[in-house]
Length: 216
View 1 (cartoon, rainbow, N blue to C red):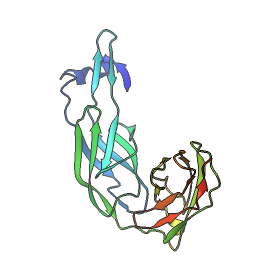
View 2: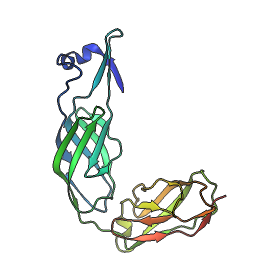
View 3: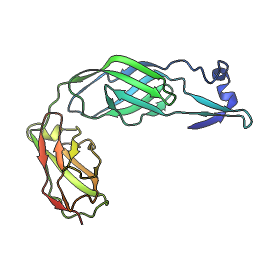
View 4: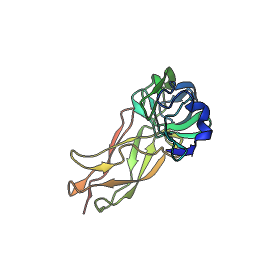
């Protein structure tokens, strides 16, 4: 939420704060990505943001919250990098194909660009290895290292999903992007059981498990 003076929004307020025009997506850049390559994108759009006026204080509270989606995948919360342009990232969780791009404002108004983003075939590693995990304390973040293997390993910059056994509470469920075939990041496990296993999967169907480690 951003607070500005009424004067700044005088022209916008002339039509009334409860009757804002619909947002509109102008462009998505880049308009495509390989399925295996984590990709930052910019979305250019006309976004008449919802606002609430406090006439006594002479201010306008403008809601800058925007949800961005490609297909059914919700992206990381976008940020305004310049007027009318939002930046976010697309993880490697979408199968090849064409997808609608959507922006949803905090008051529910939606802008949709049909088939505005295309996912191309990717180049995935042959498999992954997970460095041994020692005994960990429940609810305390610890660092894991996952390494891509095979012909495309060194150039892999994608994301993987994390899984574990039934009922095991842990997070995050999606990794950061790999850096030249290596992922180093923190995860945290709850105390639903005395031991756990970390499982790595990707969009290409690879599935690799860590050693069983203790939680205590």
